[in-house]
Amino acid sequence: MTMILRRAVIRHGRQLIPPQAQTRARSLATEVDVQSLQDSSEGIEASLKNSVRETKSIESEAQNQSVKYVPQIDAQKLTKPLGTTISPHYEPHRLVSDPPRPSDITLELLLASQAHLGHKTSHWNPANSRYIFGIRQGIHIISLDATAAYLRRACRVVSGVAESGGLILFAGNRPGQDRCVTRAAELAEGCHLFERWTPGSITNGHQILRACRTRVVDEFDREISGYGNELEDLPALKPDLVVCLNPLENWVMLHECGLNAIPTIGIIDTDANPTWVTYPIPANDDSLRCVQVIAGVLGRAGEEGQERRKERALHGDISYYPTDLGGNEDHEQEQEERQFQKSKRNK
Image (cartoon, rainbow, N blue to C red; front, side, top):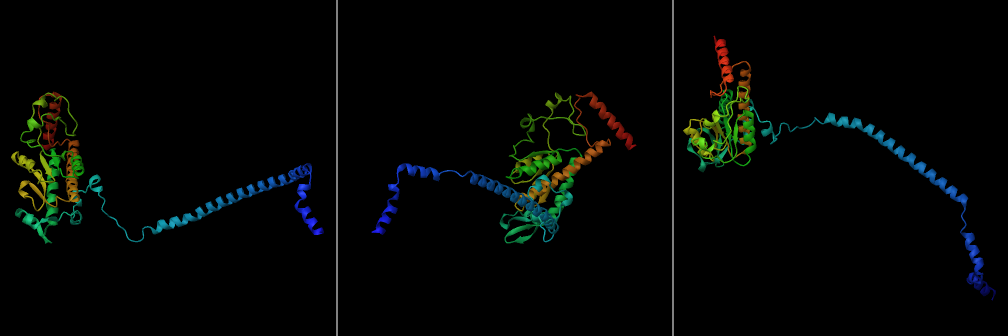
């Protein structure tokens, strides 16, 4: 019986306690210990200081590790030249931005540019038999010796025309040839054409090209004023040399050049007729890389000719004189004085 009463008191003890006593006990339980709060804040501050020290120590270790890593980078630089190299290698943009010079013509360069590949044997022109080296898997192989020899001859022609002050026209209207054509014309200080040739531009130039602007320049290519009215009655200018990169599509232009006794240079593949141009270059006209090499080399040749012409002009040796149009008396006097000085030096 005593055990039963004890369990009842324990189970129902809270219900027997009055409400005021319960509230007082709850308030006593929720009282805050100020001393414990101060101790906890000091502990938090100490932990923050420890974390700051740890971060500083980590940063210092990282700096030490970076300083220790410098000798490893130097070791990599020392060992970098070791092993195989891939230089020189093909860079497509170099053929346009920095084309090769006539002195750089080698059989290796022509072979790498696929200048030796011709067409099928069923498409060949018998007039190209002297340029063909042999047959490989039903395809004619062009002799690179002949290509190099004829390319060097064409370079001498372009250089000579540029040195004499002639006007050179570079033409090529196949896809992808516009950049190399304009670059070659820029180097040789000539003209370029990368669109369709207008028939009659040479034979009927006074009608087709009469709206084009013409100017008179001196030996340093500086424009001379005073010839505005006289230039209107002059016929359209004709090129002194035409470089055609795709003769098959521009046979009309080549025919007009032949009628006007204008020398021409062209890339002749195994399916083209070498008699269409004055100075043929047997090569693969379907390879853009081959066309860029040939156009760049001819442009460099024209650049060398222009440099020689301007160097001679500095010493008073002028290869050509502007046309006497009777519109500038001061320029005529200068021209007569130059002729007199030149004849005096020859004596």
